[in-house]
Image (cartoon, rainbow, N blue to C red; front, side, top):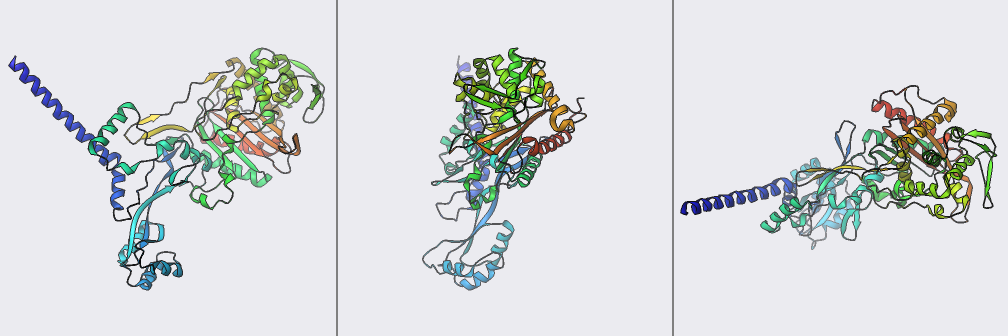
Length: 568
């Protein structure tokens, strides 16, 4: 019995020693690895004013097609140069020495140098380390250097609306736009508590790790920087050529919702956001703006007709060029009648009367049910301020509202929402969740993949194959008379032109249009869906005029860059 008790005591003491060692090891890990850089920064700044804090924040990375991570948002290190006028014995000598290394105004420098009762005056910020070393070598009495860090965006304007930036809200420096804002709780660091009680911090960190509540980390995005750069250049060309108010683009994997590029023009330099005169440029209309998209909605309407069995590609109707419902009349884009034509012709020639015929065959209630699933809710993309769609017209019993919705007027949605819906045409019929962050690299030393919600089936696989075949024929036969069809790759695509609503007087402008274009490829097993839009281009009425060339350029680039094998 005594031996058993002795053995128990030995084991208990041993376990206690092991536990203590683990605690100490864990604490050392927290100090040296997790918070090591922060402690070092605090040490570098120990002689600065008591209110100063070492800035720290998680990084944001792009991901290349080969899986390499490229910095999109990181920290840059430099120095602040300060004066202590009470210790500055020879201000003119100090100015002469510093002016060779810094861009200083003599009058401003002397004004600060003569404030004999002020122990701290800043004369330069964000001074590079090599310049700081030269200043230190001057050994000027009353001149000090303090190390600091700030947010830096190596890509400058690359993916500016998506990355976002940091600015002050009151006294707090926080992410205000884009991923900086959406993932602020992950990216921000609370370095004020670095010197908290040993055991409080220790057990808090252990508990957070066990419970999964530890949030501090860096984020890795799905954005492919080379693709993003190419797309942005194409948008710049569109703006320059057509004088558009705005142009935007999305390149997404239609099977899983990963976004490779998402871009807007006009844009801005993230490192110089403070110099922007019109703050509306910060707004990300790809997720915050709602638009009547026009004829790119027609493939959704046709897919609904196919999925319900209301029509087939060979179904015919008598096109009279116009339709009158509830006392209102709408027309084909050219107001011409085609006579008896089939559903393929409806897409090839983008006939408003044809898709309204599809709605008539499907029925208003069933059509609305499908459309609300497709574009009736926010997408859930991981960006702030996503706007809700405007689809109240689908709730009415008036035939005219459903008819106009069939060709993309009277209902409005965000570019990301229509991209999500259109992806379901080519991916087998599923609504995938668009997303920008693929993983989070936590400070605690582990990485977690960000898994989107499970996709929802909207169309049957048969419907997806048939609408894709029809849209391939649109490219092969109708788009530029088939001259732009790729010989080795099938592309399913459709243009869209919508009148822009006049918010002040009601109705629509006669001379202002929103152009849109979408396509996916290879059509029967798509790796990419590309969406483009162009707001109020000058000198062109139809989307085929302004967006066909950039769409084809992006398509050919992606095929070559990713070495997409031929499918025909």
